[in-house]
Image (cartoon, rainbow, N blue to C red):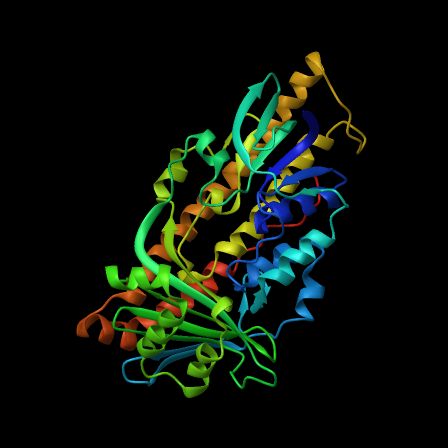
Length: 415
């Protein structure tokens, strides 16, 4: 069975829904294909930096999310070896693009907020893409259930195992050898954790606790697991939780209580993967009328908290570039075009996606590279590295978090 849509977006994650909503704000209908049977909230929450709030403002979703999450006042870094604070930085300072704004946003609230703004029928669940073919000026998207959508624009927002990225020629993202455990603890009353980015480093382990609101705290641990620890990750959540509690080191009791109060189904463990940044320099972020965004484009380690933020940027920039291509000379209305007109439209789409690719190439390269270096420094082990990080590098690393978030992807307006 064949269906048709102007824009098909593969994946209903952050970048896919942000792109779809951006297009909707411009009057362009899209079809979002999601392989799962519902929105996926894996990861529980993510640090939403200034650049992400700029994107959410452009999408018209920021104010509702602001009301549901506490503002973070600053960054506090401590040694998990000595228990002593090594650095503190306020988030009150102004950046190049105005005041900094940082919160920890619950993933389900973000995804539901994006999805609820879309027209009914935009998201098609249980739609697994298996391959992509050319069909003149269109792309044919083969689904596992036999449905064959034909589209003028194909956007791959299908994560680290992206079918669209593979079609464009990208390799599978590389494994770092590190793993992350992410969880969210829910308290019946106030948790008592300061509204700050609370980070703890030392002996090859990086951990943190960040309040989302008065009763929910997001936490994470990243480290390089042994083969035995990898087995724990896969086989026994209860033992893994106890093991990680023993590895927390000298951190405040109220932060340990966050991990202790986390239900076994409220944390996940996963290996960390990333795309080699140089692949973005010569790889096809777009080709013809197809492109990738989000983790399909720039999977990165979580060390500067920019994966989800960058995905929101992608959505705004891509929607703007596609809007310029699809609405140009159409009086704001979409029309089906064949023959010479179809060719002209295809060329405009190709130019729009090339513009998107050029805007996102170096930004993605920068964030992937910075995150990889910061992660290496934060998790490096040994007395010398622990001393160097605690005494000298903490201010530099903390400053990088703000510097990389001081970015504005722009509005949705079409020039």
